Length: 238
Image (cartoon, rainbow, N blue to C red; front, side, top):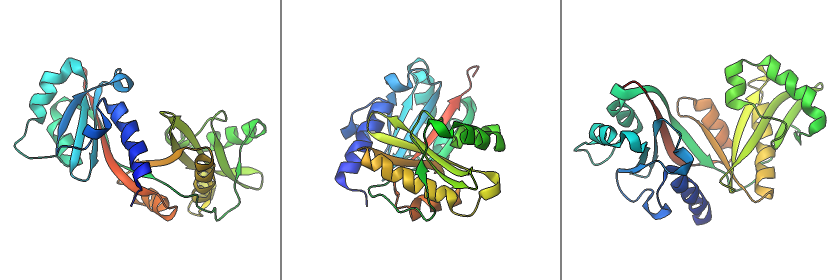
C-alpha cells in the first residue's frame, strides 16, 4: 500500500492537472470538472479512477454536450463504460492505463549507468533501430535524466524521465529490438528510479492495462498501483 506522503503528492499533482482540489479528487463516485490550466488546450476528456471514485475533466466549450452524454443513473463508471458513453463524439481512446509509484530504489539486475552528452551518438543509434512510434512512446532526449544498459558499446535499453509538476518523475522505457526479453529494460528503469528518488522526486510508471508484461515489470520493481486513467480524444466535427 502506498504511504500517505506518496498519495498526497500524487493527489496534489493530479488534482491540479484535472482542475480540482486534492480533497475533491476522489471524494465522489463520479465527479465532472472543467479543464484547468494544464488541460486548457486538450480537445478531449481525461478521467482518473481510484478506489470507487472517478473524476473526469472536460473542455468547457463542450461542457453541456458532454455532461448530457455522461448523465447516468449508475453511481459511477468503469473505464470501459466511461469510454463507451462518449463513443458518439470520440475520435480515439487512450487507456485504460495503469499509473503506479515507487517509494524505494530497486537494484538493477544488469549493470546500468547514467547517460551524459558523450552518449548522444549511442542514443541516436538506438533511435534509428526502433520504429518511430516506439521512440515516441518510450524514447528520451539526452537533455533529460536517462539511464541505460550497454551491451558491446550499444544501448541495449534506455529509461528516462520528465519532471511533472516539480514533484513527479514520469518514466519512459525503450529496449533495442535485438535485446528484448532479457531484463535490460527493467534494469534501466531500476537505475533511473533510484536516481529519481535521490533527486527528491516521486517515480511514476504508466502503461496500458492491456500491456500485462509492462505492468509486471513495474510490479517486480516495486511500483504500486495508484489509479487508472482513460483519455478520450474528441472528434472536433462532432
